[in-house]
Image 1 (cartoon, rainbow, N blue to C red):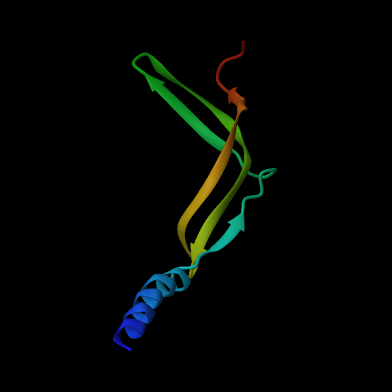
Image 2: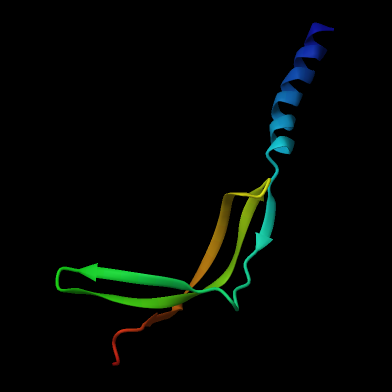
Length: 83
């Protein structure tokens, strides 16, 4: 009987935290999202944009707790250089 109770307690210790901290994922609207970047050097700086391929943010009780973004590096643009 003690072994069954111990096994049950271990199972609950593993399962309960997973349910308590379950976060809701919200997809990022990639057509309306852009990352703005700035690179600095001793003699000046450059700035531009890069687009997202996909992404989501994880929310728990309305608070940001995580997320994941896939950046499309082929879309990188430098906005302050003309050539």
